[in-house]
Length: 191
Ligand SMILES: Cc1cc2nc3c(=O)[nH]c(=O)nc-3n(C[C@H](O)[C@H](O)[C@H](O)COP(=O)(O)O)c2cc1C
Image (tube, rainbow, N blue to C red):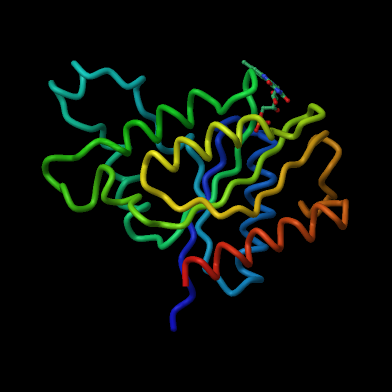
């Protein structure tokens, strides 16, 4: 059986994003769990702020179509989320909102169809004390509305600016084990 494909999405496009570091650590954990991870950078999927008039006029943006195709060809999704004001980033909401819209030229590989019944996992990071935990609560809800099956295992990394070693691994063995457990559960669910 081919290894289940997992699309890994950091919720920040910032070049030095802590969530990108966590996503890279998750990629390694997914591969160790015998999955096949694909790590993307939302900086390469720039979309305008969702506006229904814009959609009516121009359809979904080209970057949305590219990301929808990627989501469609992966069996599972892992999001590494930062926390903005106790919730997820506007970048993440906007990206997911656009991807939930149907591309009339490609209706079976766009919109809610690409999320339906697919397993998802959430991991969070922030320099603060909660490690993005509050963002994950909102994100879990949103992915549920999209029809995804969000696995119960998750991990948050508080004080994330101090959490990684020079090789990008998590310093804390408990956090490391929790990330491995998330990856293993997601790969199992995707298989
Ligand atoms: C608008 C805004 C709101 C923020 N709110 C929170 C917050 O609620 N909790 C928190 O821990 N950090 C908060 N932060 C700090 C971010 O966690 C920090 O900038 C983090 O590094 C952003 O994620 P990234 O490193 O993945 O880009 C906020 C930052 C911004 C810009």
